[in-house]
Length: 323
Image 1: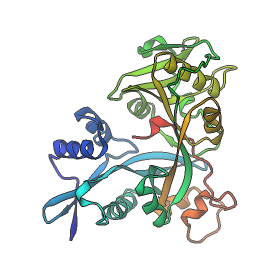
Image 2: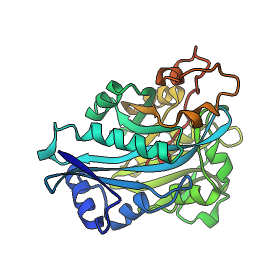
Image 3: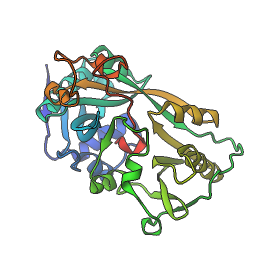
Image 4: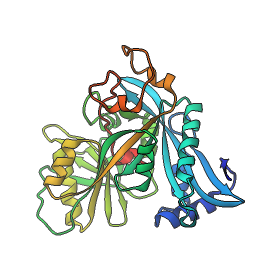
């Protein structure tokens, strides 16, 4: 029988060892504390370990956010850093993690339990079998082949945030109007997008910040970006790509925008398809976002079907929104 231990004490070193064993260069103590000890969405994350006869099989966490759905703010929960040790696979661990995460999300009053997954991730099939809503997402990586991409905008980069004008509200709402999105207080946004464990740079046009970039290995991760004056988000994306290529680095960004995905592929980015999955955790909390919705049980399919009165629309999420 598999048991679940919730929020065990003094597991940081062991949990880190398991994460790095399962995911390679996952991170160290600073990354652990950034992921699992910060308070977002009004709550600290919950951590679980799965054990069988005293041996650990796997672990997972649930982190929390606030999200804007149909112009109504609700709490949501996110499955974060789920892992199963190689020798413990094919025992139903991930299914147990999903069920326990749903229970935690419901207790926290979270409308949805979400997860970020790639299309080929084995967890994706399990979540789809569970009946989740699926919203397309796109992981995009620039080429490293020396192609000539000319920056379309006057562009500079600094690691000193005091040297540029940083408008958090504009970066938070850079996508399409009316899209579902995560919502942060200014302090939460800074802790999520700026106060990270790796070096962060600020991409600027005329001393105005239009992008936040995290350095990790050979990658420049574009955490958030926006247009400025006559320059579109596509212009800023292309300028960041040109900078990365010039420095023999690769630009990575994550988007839920099909138009941004199409543009990135057009200029040479490689695309890894994925999904944002959503399971209904607390139906009462979710119903608050449908002011004129007919009564009756909500199904996950309703949430992503444009013909449904319970359609929540497209998501506007970036790489920085992910843990």
